[in-house]
Image (cartoon, rainbow, N blue to C red; front, top):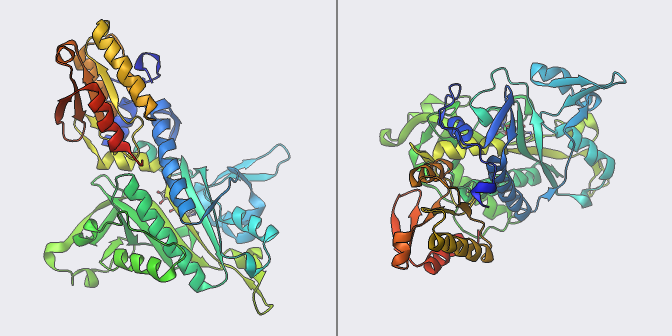
Length: 445
Ligand code: P5A
């Protein structure tokens, strides 16, 4: 993408109403625009990151054996009357009437709708286990939408729902989600810690929230800091192997890590003092096992291997897809701007032409741009007629992990400069070597 032809409306000034750094940088980097309280347009740069995050979520869900579908944003109220949640949900639910005076709502979550799909099409234990998920916009009329996409009213969620024959099978689905989420967040460059939490309006007794530690997080968290060094890494997971998956979950949930809702000071006090930490976290996901809470009242039953009709055991599992942009920025930035982890960056590399109009510099930039493209990497080429300082400031603000700087002086010696946004370190090398290095960094992304 050539910056001269892109739509990147960066702001020079700090927006007055943005209280936290991720919100400030998302506005300044021209990623989002607020249209109403807690409701945003996704401008091209923000949209690219959103799509990248969705892509990672999809890949890891499919890897775990879960099946994508797409349910609508608008739902009939009658489904929610069946589960009993229509009245329970209160003012967070946006209620709408259609022209026939039928009660509708903008879905805050989809337990009822997926249960309706299941009961209409599945009737035998032979069709289980089954986990369906989608990535779809939700609406919650939050009392205090704030911090940009972090607590929106309209927000993008991945929500998945498992249907199993009994509790053991459903707990395996729960564990499978936990492990697949760990992998998902790690690919985004995040450490998200599963913490015992409370289930709220979704229900059930088993639930974990995934929290990214950040001072600006909305949840108070209590944890043994050894939990922060656990990594799933590239280990090979067989998602059908119940004991392997359960072992991984045990590894990640044995050390104390809880939100204030489930905090137990007496247990916490037993952690060696040097490891006892109280902090704040951003909730980027939550998983639930709620047994037959929806299947029983809504009649989602199957015939088991003994010929009996039994309600299925269910759980639901959510990732805050749009919130993740904010969480990643909170976890990865400096005073000049965002520092995107390679896994989610909107563009893998930026090209800065220090002397637009200089024929050697222009030709070298074009050559780099095309050579990167040939390797499947779309660079953001700053081909504007701007001062070098302004170009660097824009690149630093939007946070691409790598920058190739091209100028007449370097080219006279046959070199360009490759700079890491994270460390600030630069290395001179030939344009070909720079292309190879960047391609190597992104190999297998
Ligand atoms: C699980 C999937 C559920 O709704 N039902 C379907 C269950 N869980 S949840 O914890 O309430 O939401 C899942 C994740 O969505 C994100 N989230 C939000 N993101 C931005 N703005 C909001 N107002 C908002 N509310 C929830 C969180 O990341 C949460 O973990």
